[in-house]
Length: 106
Image (cartoon, rainbow, N blue to C red; front, top):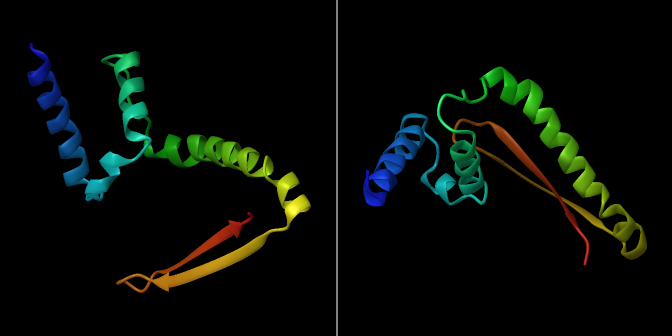
């Protein structure tokens, strides 16, 4: 199969995933999309993706630990230069409340 047909096959598969799960189209522009596809190609066919349980109970915890470590790498700078903690909140169309906390340090 030529490269154009392979790209189209991948594009259709990704598009179906995006469309039928009501994921915003701009998710394909995420900095995490291509690395995910690269890993999928590397592990090859037949390897099953993670279950919802694995995403929420296994990998979410790992991501939390990585993020906590990354944030911790800035705390020394915050102690030296100061830091502002900001909060922004709004309600969605279904009245779900969303609060964003932001940390600012020059």
